[in-house]
Image (cartoon, rainbow, N blue to C red):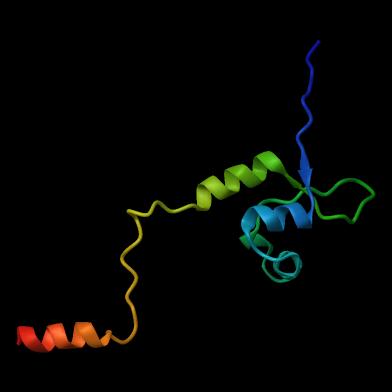
Length: 90
């Protein structure tokens, strides 16, 4: 006989903790942009929001960018030291 191992289900609080965002932001994304969250589980007869831990882990892995893929972030105004160095190089 095959045994099925249950997958833990996460609520909005646990999902928010894993994604490092607020619970209010989770609710806002569910209402306005559900495609920006992992796939959600709808239990029969329930309106509660739940996500499978395995789906969340897969979603995070698919959305994590390697640091080598990112271009260096361009800062705003140069510092005074950078301005002086640039002026001295001219």
